[in-house]
Image (cartoon, rainbow, N blue to C red):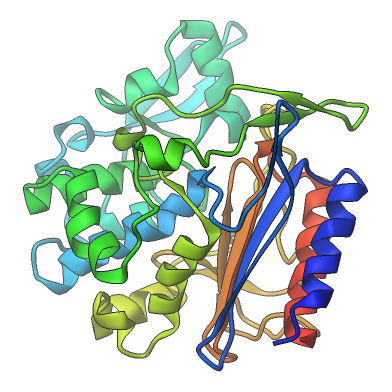
Length: 378
């Protein structure tokens, strides 16, 4: 792999104001990895970015939580189609937010079907993020409640399980299901069954001193395009299998290599690997996010001209993208503008990390597109 064009691309992107700093890691089909860094850790931290700089990877956590749940499916400790309410009482009798009156008060009704692990992992459970669902956001604004507050007691669905696709907190709930079925906390389960075996020493829910010293500062991009220091890291991150992890691009690449490997790197068995890779036929159109909170996220329409499906862990493109990933590739990202893909057909995986809001920053997505094309051209 020719590295200099990729390094030059990242240097130009930082110089043009795409981000204060970037890191990237690439897994090539020859078994070699390449790592890159450009810029600085933050506008208030002039230390150079390094390949092992630590990021809050937010929703990049989701694929790891999904893999953990599928490990337990493979071991017979979880069932994809069993109602989760037997283990998680807050979802034993879920309620659907059907409509709002002029004051934002909700009319609720019982869900017509139970929530299952399959629905959680494919974002078809009806559990949504309020920052990506205007009706849910309006409801919480009117009631003074919050998504975080209701999630552990009586989370609301925005449609009946299986009726639609809506990105949301389903993977957080799947993380609690992993803990309930395994008898371990989610951090302990990950450490024993994923991070330890894969050598992911730089990944965890609560960064220790060594990782904190390499932490990249959080930023927000203002309307004029300039960056300001911000504080948006999650509280109690160990609760959030949907977005609580901190990691580095090289460490996350170890997980993506396990997804690429036919033997799952000894961590993912044949059933888990197949479920992570193959689209679920019960999922309709997947992958478009419409913001209800512009300070947190832009609208996000990945691969808009490409047929897409959702596996039990990833967004999957069903056709080749010229100059980029092959059909059957697996991808997603994290709220603070981290993005990745894994391409089993080509044996290529890569991750590009920044640390600022809003998500789906147009300039950052342009850099990601150019980065991906440079990886395949190398």
